Every structure is written in structure tokens, then in C-alpha cells.
Image (tube, rainbow, N blue to C red):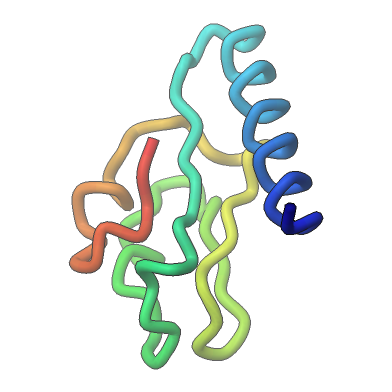
Length: 84
């Protein structure tokens, strides 16, 4: 078993639990395997709460404390690397 994969799964589960507690029910996750990581993420500029950030051309990261679950980034990601 890949230990980092287990951590990622646990982290996603914890974030989804948090979203349920908040009542939003939606948590944006980044699927790094779908992100080419060779350009500036086009979804960054459409996030109304600036919950997405990117270091260089790496896959974007989601600040779940800022994310309101509106889904704009998910709809606008051309590679489908952002999802609920």
C-alpha cells in the first residue's frame, strides 16, 4: 500500500466530514494526476473567496476555510482536476 495515498484518503474524508458539519456538503478536491502542472491554473482567477492558490506551476491547493463550495473552479477547470 502506498502510505501517502492512505494519508490523502484520510485527509479528504476529514474535510468532507467538516463540510457536513458546516452544512455546505461540498468540498473541492484537487486530482493531481489530472492537472498537467505546466501552466498557471485558469480557475484561480474565478474563485470569489480566493480559496485557490498555486505555487509556480504546481497543482493548485484549496484553502477549505475560505472555500464556500460554489463550484466555479470545478466548472472552469479544463482538465477536470478540480472536483467535489
